[in-house]
Picture 1: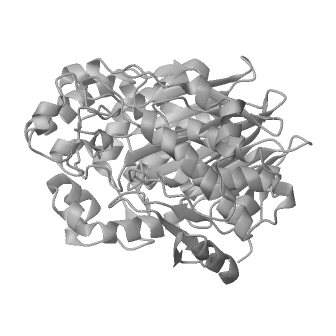
Picture 2 (picture 1 turned 90 degrees about the vertical axis):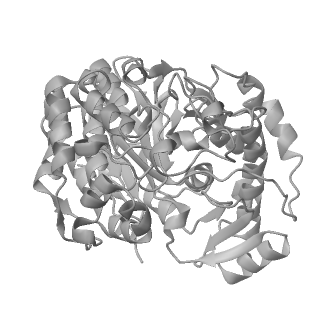
Length: 527
């Protein structure tokens, strides 16, 4: 299978669905900037990739504005309701993963769109949402990924009345390629386009969502929606071989991506053959060390102290690097995390750049659709712990540990690589693969994305230290990893379990080089 990088002289859009990429390109052609295009891509993904993301989910944004310089970050994740305590789940081992009682955090997505567009957008709000509205009301061809995920979650979807009507029309799984219309969602998007952000948090949509939840014993209130706001935050920063690294700070797990790269900086990767046992083993062991600290500290920084300065220091990276056994696998227990996510990025002709990611948490989130709104709600709050001693314990008005982590690597203060991926536990793993392949081995974004990948641990389900390796990794390498103590399982050559990754590189000539994952339905569009 041959995968060629797409190069644009001025612009580039990458996303996991070609129609969403096309929406961003249309906005750029109309005179919009990268921020307009990014919101259009995000909103379109909420329509054409509904099993992965939607208006009822969260998002995180990294942005570079030529006007302002530097890198800014926006946290568009939601908090738990102000009356939601652990007592509401007394006697239960964990918060339910599906159903009405898994909906305990306010969706932050729409707030994120509004914040980015209000701060930096050029086109009208209604213009930016127009492509998504069109896809919803006029329909689009069901993707292979949506078809497969719908089939695999048939019983979950069938158990929810509004959800089953939308996602299982006439009680069946829509075929890949058939036209699929979401009238209710389209009407909600149109309401949002006409009335703005407040329609979702204080107006008609908020009232409809909360009424549908409370009819079934839901826990969120109108006050929870009305009181929601995301926030501009200072990115977490580090460096790797002279490149500046930017991630979202906690409650995102982004700092693990920086920690891992700074651990690997202590090793001469250029002297290690790419794709060898030494390459995979070293990266996996570095990631495990970063995961250990992530699981110890990560939660809402408003509720707990997180020693980010120490975790991101070069001295600590050197200390951790010294703990790696170059021949044996380390045992590290981690908590499984969700994988239903969509990453995308946009660079425009002026040099503005947006790296962003969004999610419902599990595939189809809670599986609960908010009545006649067509809006599928996330189950992100189910990741809170009911253990009163756990750092990520459930408390009112709290943001949970979040897997979403869009990334940028800069050179001399300007964006050089925008990168990210779907896949919960796999996000820092795949980001590490992409960055080492591009910086240490000189690969272009498409090569870096298309090369064989791995996934250590589980995205959800029972905790495990299983190491899934795509079958394109050479058998002698897989054998050596097994001998070193890794619990190896071989998966498909291009397996969706390892995530859907995308990247944009701005090269020495200023050209925009895009790469999208052959494991998904995405596209890179640039000119």
